[in-house]
Image 1 (cartoon, rainbow, N blue to C red):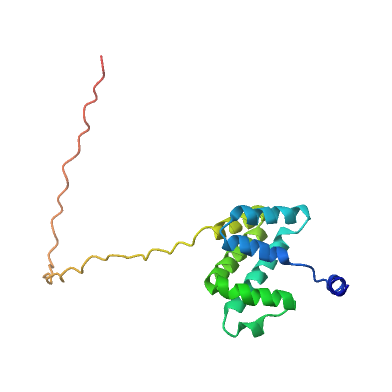
Image 2: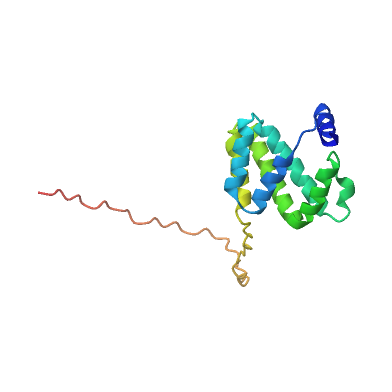
Amino acid sequence: TAKIDADVVRRMAGVTDRSYLFHISDALEAQDAAAALAQLAQLRQQSVDVKRLTEELIAHYRALMLAALPGGQALLSGVSPEEEALYLQKGPEMGQREAIRAVNAFGSALEKMSRGTDQRIELELAIFSLTQPETAAAPVIIRQPAPAAPAAPQAFASAPRAYTAAPPVQAAPSVVPP
C-alpha cells in the first residue's frame, strides 16, 4: 500500500507517471521511429495535448542534457527520485549532443505550432527527424580568385573622345513558306 499511497499523493499534487517520455526518448535513441510514433498515437488516444507533450519533451531532454553534464545533478529540479535516477543513468549514455539536438528539434516544432501549422504533424516530423542519423555539415569552401596584379596607372586624358555610332542593325528578311 505504500506504493499506492505515493501514487495517490502524486496525483493529488498534480504529478503523474511520465514514463511515456522515457519510452519516446528510448525509441528515438534506438532510431525506432515506428515505436516513438506509436507512443505518440497512444497518447493522442488518451487526449494528450500535442503542444503540451512537446513542451514536456523539451523539459525531458533538458533534464537528460543536465544529467549528462558533470555536476548537472544539482540542476535537476521538479523530478521524482525515481526519475532522477533514470536521468542520471540515461543522460550520460545519451550524451549532451543528442539531448541538445532533441531540444532544438522539439523547440523548432513548438515554434511552428504557434504559427498555426498542424501540431501533430510538426511533432511527428520532429520525432522522425531525430530517428535519422545526424549528418555532419560539410565545410563550405569558398574559393576566391587570386587577386589580379594592380593595373598600371592610366594617363589622364583631358580631350573629349569622338563619339562613333555603331552601324545600324538590319532585320533579317522574313521567309514565308510556300
